[in-house]
Image 1 (tube, helix red, strand yellow):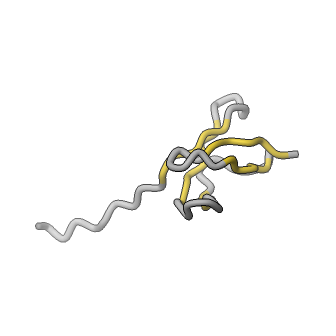
Image 2 (cartoon, one colour):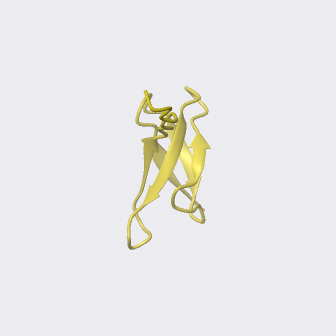
Image 3 (tube, helix red, strand yellow):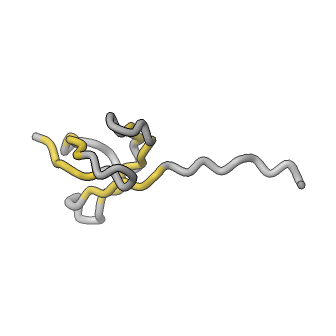
Length: 60
């Protein structure tokens, strides 16, 4: 069974398996954006956030 959520960038509908884990990374098949899965405390509501990778700080 899957949950359907929308990409925050292009509103494409994504099917997210119910056994997906919090913090897992998936890619939007429409725009290619990498998204981090967020699951509520109760294990219900699933949302997607754009994956942000912070660059290393080289002391600049």
